[in-house]
Image (cartoon, rainbow, N blue to C red; front, top):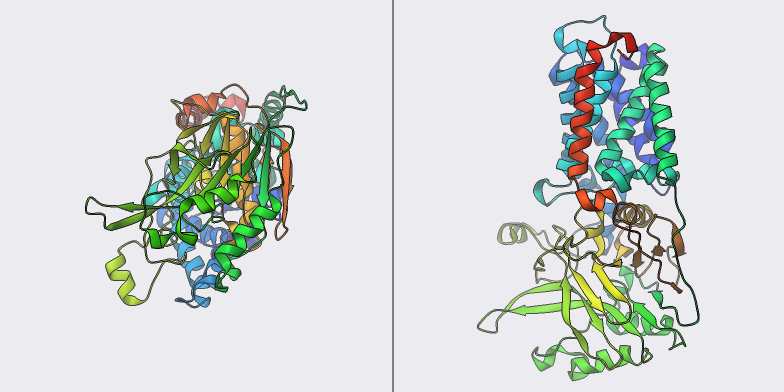
Length: 527
């Protein structure tokens, strides 16, 4: 340990990079916990607040560079910007995101490390660990909120290989579970670094009890010949096919081929984001439509539906101003019935991706050669937020398009709780690491809200996820196919679904209260 401390920044850069291996697809969660323990030990040993912050930042640079490596692949499909710019973008993003671990490290050092008082002999204790964990919760929430938010890969997601632990999120949410993970790493630090066994024993016992309490219970599910089923379609047509002038028709035909035909049971047919590139609403200028009219496209899809079937399809919705001039576009989901009619409501994506769906400061950035990663010059317009749509015969469905599913506590209309969540996505941009990481975060939303999640993507990973985060059916990356399964039942509202991220704030306050109380009770041996 002393030898590692002699090169703290190199050690932490490597430790941060290794910590990202706990995320999918590698899922080496013990490595993440060990790396966080090393971070806490080296931050505690920092000689000043500036050094503590810089150590946390260095860890973050390694952590986010490796964890977000998939972003580079988005640049492979953009002719206006060279692919090498993707590598620069990954590092620049990591340099910014590392600010949040730096803040957590600085707060823990300043508020709870004996080093901040100039005492170089006192060992860290339980108060330092709990303050670090509380600070991590607060800063991870800030990361998901500031500058439109970037909530990708919260630390809590590493527990998905151990679902009994991941299900703690149903009570306290993702950000609080991330803090609990940091506290466990701190307990490991005390055990290995200073042979302090009491707090690690308490942490292990608490984790075991919480895991048992949160363990899965049977979900009632009646299955019969008339039970409604969902058919999730994955055409395996990637972004590279966009160079083909027939891409729009090609992906539509591929979707139709995988959609099957009417059955005895009712089917909810769901297609991925980006699958219908023809406009499906009426009322646009005639020359904007495939073969002249929107009913042609709707009719082709409706021909796949039986009398009790319904479809959820994603398409672009064009917005005009009062003078009928183009104002922008919406990334939308429509409900389509067997007669080829659209439902009275649609869902417009609310949490848009900067540089993906709109170009910030367009007049300035476009002049220096930057453009959106998604082809097109029209920026998307944000919808009003989470929305639940009625789908006749199948109940109510909450909609979250692609990236929106990663924002804990922001995926459900709490005034109109749905029976399930539909998450159409286009993960064809995301390389090999992005799709499994995206799927993992969708599983956390299912656990938090107690709702099944249906995911459909063009190239994978499509999935049916039950209300406890279990994968009921999947279609892997770069495979064409379909899943047709009974729609999993929802659970009663979870504690987190009632409290939202207020639950994380409560956990922060409890951790800080115990951290303050610990020094007054030395007989417990926690410091």
